[in-house]
Length: 195
Image (cartoon, rainbow, N blue to C red; front, side, top):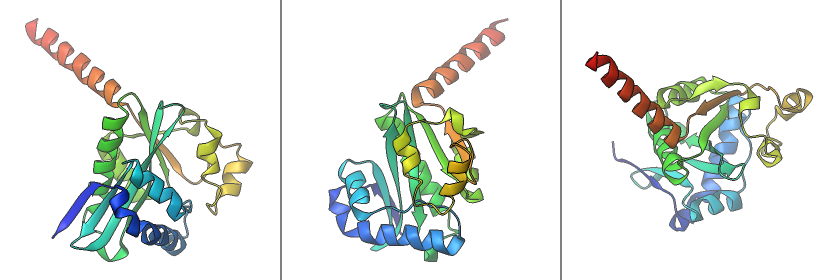
């Protein structure tokens, strides 16, 4: 299969409208909460190098972007979408892995989080090191939660004072935390081996 996944840039501007349409159609088809995005928003993510885009030959295959919150303390991977004709080929996992690594490379001190209603995305997130958490462990930036307003489940989030919704919250350590944990584990193993 001729799939390419790359960091998006302003050169990919022609795909912004199609990406937003794919996101909206997916939300409608699944009847689940995916916040609506405007082409201008997607274009901004592309121009800043804060998105990945996938192609099957010349055909748009998928997309995902990153956002920063709380002055870089948190990074979210959002808007994951795969062309319906290309689902069940492992493309979502490949896109998510690429955007996860992009987020950690660009913002090594930031914890990476996401909220989703998709079991498939939860499984992908788990394979990348995310753990389920309560909403209180995520950014409390009002702008993040305002992004949920276009979701059909927003009233549930509001009724629960943004403590819970139908989405599952997931959080991964920052790249620096992950490296420190691996270093500590390595030292522990060496110490045990020396005994």
